[in-house]
Image (cartoon, rainbow, N blue to C red; front, side, top):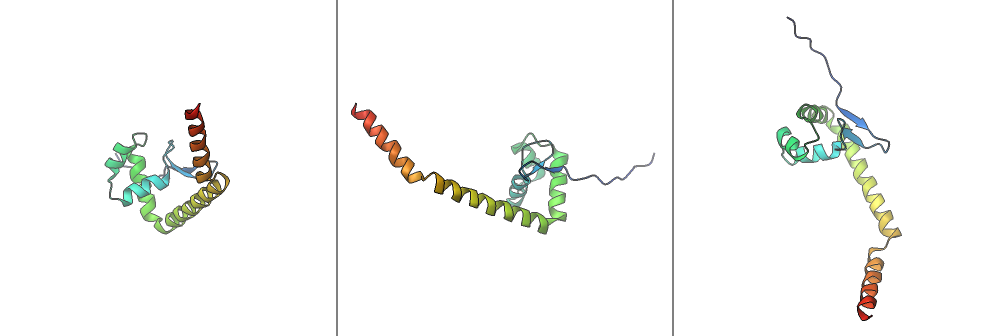
Length: 112
């Protein structure tokens, strides 16, 4: 019996927002890379994220290690986009103004 050696594609796919997900889950590439870079093993990642299977985690880590510069560019772009969205939301929904309105409403209700 001969063992067939076949290259398999990384279990990564982009969703409609361009976010790269691992396998058929909602766990992002960002998450797996971040936890891996914090020192977690593939088994520890599988324990933290039970929706991932171990083979997909190893394949994702291998993809990251083989394409580290491209993945780092992607992660940097995601981080920048996240900061832009956070700034837009804070501008649209001033957290201090909201806090003041909620405290005023609470004080008004306590007075009644």
